[in-house]
Image (cartoon, rainbow, N blue to C red; front, side, top):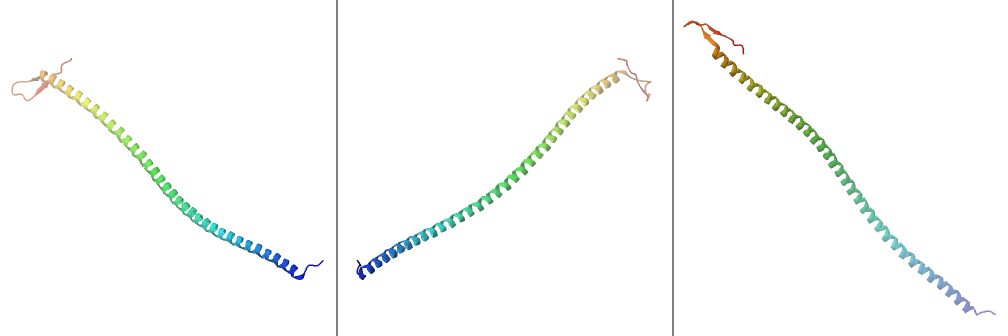
Length: 142
C-alpha cells in the first residue's frame, strides 16, 4: 500500500520544517549565548582594569610606606645619635661641675689656710731698730 505522493511529500516537508525550526531555535540560542559571552568578556575586561588600577595603587602605597619606613629608620638613628651626644655632654657637665666643686673646696681650704698663716705671721713679725728697713719673721712651732 502506497501512500499518495502528495502525502509523502507533505510529511517530508513537515520533517524539513521541524529541522528548520530546530536549527532556528539553535541559532537564536547560539546568538543569545554569544551576546552573554560578549557581556561577560566586557565585564572581565572592566574587572581586569579595576584589578590593574588597584595593583598600581597598591604598588604606589607600598613605595610610599617603604620611603616612610626608611625616613623613620633614619630619624630613629639620628635620635639615638643625639641621645648619645646628649648623654656625653651631660656626663661632661657633671664631671666639670664636680671638678668645680672640688676646686672651690680646695680654694676655700687654701683661703682658710692663708688666713691662719697671716694671723700667725702678724703675731710673730718683729722689727729691728726704729727706722730699720729689715723685718724679721719668726716662726713659732705649733
